[in-house]
Each structure stands twice: as C-alpha cells, then as structure tokens.
Amino acid sequence: MVLITDMALVFVMSIFELWIGIPLGLFLDLNPILVAISAAAGSILSAFIIVVLGEGLRKKFLKWRYRGKSPNEGRIYDIWKKYGIVGLGLLSPLLFGAPLGAALGIGLGSPRNKLLVWMIIGIIIWSIFITVALSLGLILL
Image (tube, rainbow, N blue to C red; front, side, top):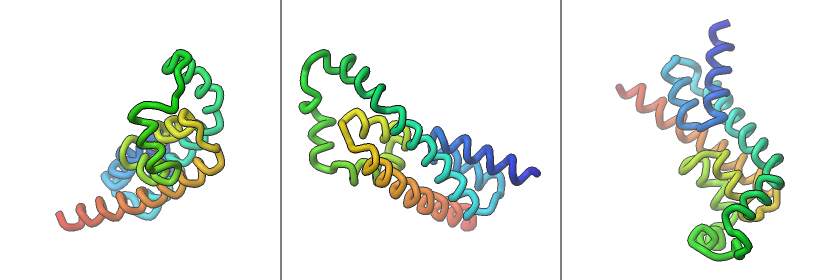
C-alpha cells in the first residue's frame, strides 16, 4: 500500500516537474526503474494536457503578448528557428519543464502531434538520465 501511494506521489509531483518527482522517489527509497517510469508518465501527462488544451490558450496568449504584432520576431522566435520542435522537445524537460515547454511549443505554432512526440522522447530520455545520475550519486554517498 505504501508503495502505491509513494509512486502516486512521484507521479503527481512529476506532473509539475521531473526535478521534483525523481529525487522525491529516490528519497523515499523506491525502485529507481519504477521512479523513472512514474515520473516520465506524470510529465508526459502534463505535456499532453497542455498540448490538447493549448490551441485556445495560444490564441489568447498571442493576442495578449503581441497585441497585433507578428510573433515571428524576437529572441524566442530566433531560438525557435534555430532548434525547432526537436530541440524544444529534447531540452525543455531539463531546462524549464515539460508543461512550460509544451506551452511554448504551442505558442510558437508547433504541430500538436510532432510536438507531443518530441516532448515524450525528451521526457523519457531525461527521466532515465536524471534517475540514473541521482541513483549513482546516492549509491556513492
């Protein structure tokens, strides 16, 4: 029973950020493989929710942020042009979290399916990497 509630806690915390869920699961002395799976699932859920709900939010954001100007200018757009969906999907789970990365991708006009695929790939990669790195760090202590 404790394992299920602890894994649920890791899942819920990972909805907000992998950097919260994974260390929490390892701190609770849970199996690192289960921690990585649960954390990835929570983060994927958050990205999925943002991508599905994102189009309506995108329109409101563009109206608020750009007030009639083109969103195709500025620093964020320059970075977007350079790295695209792949870069966003692979780096956002690490740098600023899957929900924010998904919102940024939707805001910049990414196709939903491509964005979701690359977000999932990035989440899985970083879940594995962070879990292994933290597990090895705890073992060395």
